[in-house]
Image 1: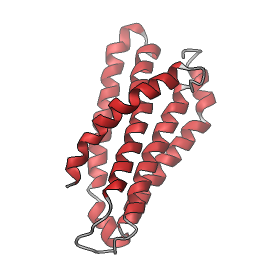
Image 2: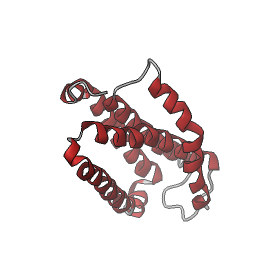
Image 3: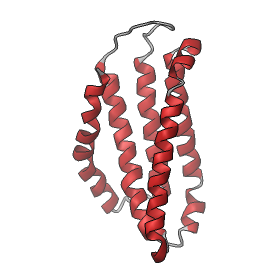
Image 4: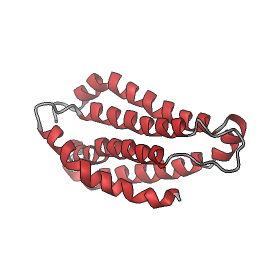
Length: 169
């Protein structure tokens, strides 16, 4: 079952966090908005892997068998994206928030995460409708395109956002 692969997120975080930490500490340390955009693009690529994995599934099929590697690749990309967003976001909440509002800003950060998780579950509930009408590939391509587009928008706004950060790195 796919639920057995939930451990992969923790494994990939432990395996790749030191590498990301080294990159963020090196001379090639991209800005926070760039990291957020990269995280979104990596998220989209994870869903792209799931879309590719679904290519052999006929529309309306009741059961299907695909390689577990597509799920592993999806978890890898999703976790790499998480490593670009979560620790960076937490760091910048503490750096950019006024001292007297840091606790409130962390609450807003985690509240936004809760809302995002709720919305992810809600939109995920559309899988049956979309896959019945258009196939599983279309469902996962939708979730490929949206975060990649959002990441590209984030990259185009990087300069403007960096100005709003007033030199805080």
